[in-house]
Image (cartoon, rainbow, N blue to C red; front, side):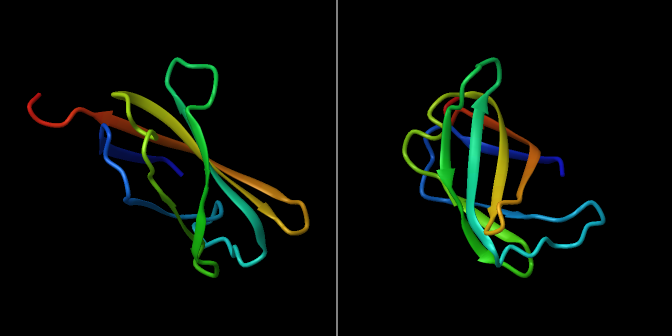
Length: 108
């Protein structure tokens, strides 16, 4: 699941929407998810930049969203991200390979 996202430094209050699928491209049913996290690490750093709760938009279709808040992308650069879904039975699935490029706004 390689996803490339571009955003502008300091922008906030918008949703990053994802569709989580299995290896065959079928949606993962998220109706029994107890927790779903969005984790982001700046390239070259060894700790997370931030971690936040996500919302399930459509459990049957595997659709989730994260609402960007103040401070999330306040530095220009490249970031790695992953989505970690924990189900009621304790099973955990991690969706990685999300790349985020934070650019400056105008003037450049």
